[in-house]
Length: 429
Image 1 (spheres, one colour):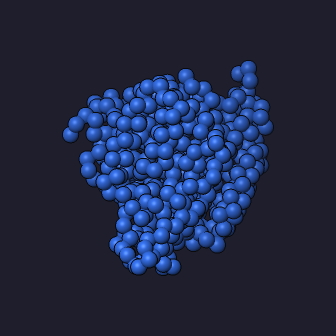
Image 2: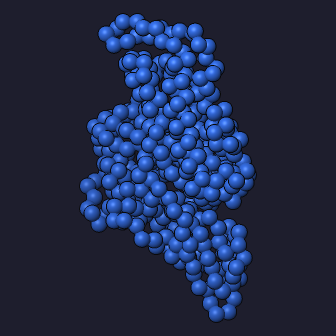
């Protein structure tokens, strides 16, 4: 195996940067070689706010993984988050012929391109084009129309878009850290790839990735994403509320949250007191009931926002398989139970399916996104990602061009090259 037959799955979060070095050995799911984790700095609510800090954190995580595996990576799949992400569904049509003819890969590509041709503001670009299903002469529910006979081909796609400026800032950080991005993947979609089963996606399910700075929501119906949204709230909001409400430093508030907090205040006794270090180093007595009440209020507010987003997607009636929680903040004691009560849905805590060969250094809901990135190149993800894959030989040419664009990201890109690279990222899996 060549030294370049590996890529990095890179999850750049508000609290940590995690890098998995994954071997490309021809299997549907790559084999993980090593993992590197570094504290994150310079990211707020999923968006870069400090370039130097992000560059150092990314470089540290990637180099740790490369040193452990004793090999270098050729490009990276990078998670992207932030409230600037949004989604919409679009339809496209391709006329086949006057007489019924078999659907060809180029017909599928024409239909998808027509669906993708939506009017977007100049500061937004497409990150994903995900097929939701095809219709041939009125026959719905078709996943692969190639070879079917008809006169008209319709497709519905799910478009995930992002503001261009945050993507360019993230790309700049990656280039300076010596990492060439192959593609950006919405963090919620990456987490879903690691924790959801095909049956759950078919029945209807919502995956909620609760991180330190954001909540990423993706609703799946009939096997494909229907709604994608990112809320600018997360575990750091809980920590900040505790620091303000109890008048203690942020690091002490984080420690109390991890050790004693619960999303259900009634579980804490009224007379239970905790010792905490206040400003200046003095010790103060803190009521655990008060601590849980502060946490519970923020959790309820967050779940109310998520419930409103689910309603925009069609409501809980579409989600027969309920809701799956991921992310480090979702492990808060009582969070899943409170979510089931307020969302009025069955709720479970998602444990990511880790890629082959990965040791137990990165496991649990906090690492769902990076585990999903490592699996993103597998057949399950690729089948849903970008119906332009039906192009056959054109796909091979495009994949080579996409890799070249990723390598060229190490140099300064002209505005025209930026637009070309963005077009390639939108269409390639």
